[in-house]
Amino acid sequence: MVILSNMMFIFMLMFLWGNMIFVSKYKHLLVVLLSLEFMVLSMFFFFVFFFSFFNYNFYFLLVYLVISVCEGVLGLSILISMIRTYGSDYFQSFNLL
Image (cartoon, rainbow, N blue to C red; front, side, top):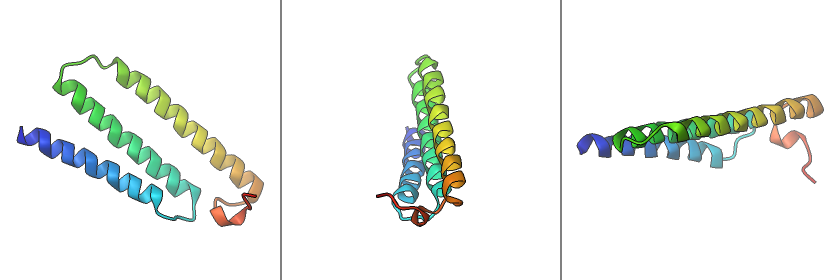
């Protein structure tokens, strides 16, 4: 039971670190995308641990990985189009209005 509580603490700490980086004000879009991927990865580790602890099937993990890959590709495509349009990935280099 101690292992379970330690692993849950580690997963929650990973998620909170990623969330803290995402919420804080960074200048680059790439750092924000990397923090989102870190949160997705921490949630994936939590699901693997949860499903293996309760002996569930791992089919949901395949669907979760597909959705997270689509999210990553969408973020990279937005980053590439922003770099081509504005010349950099600074948030302050373009006007949102």
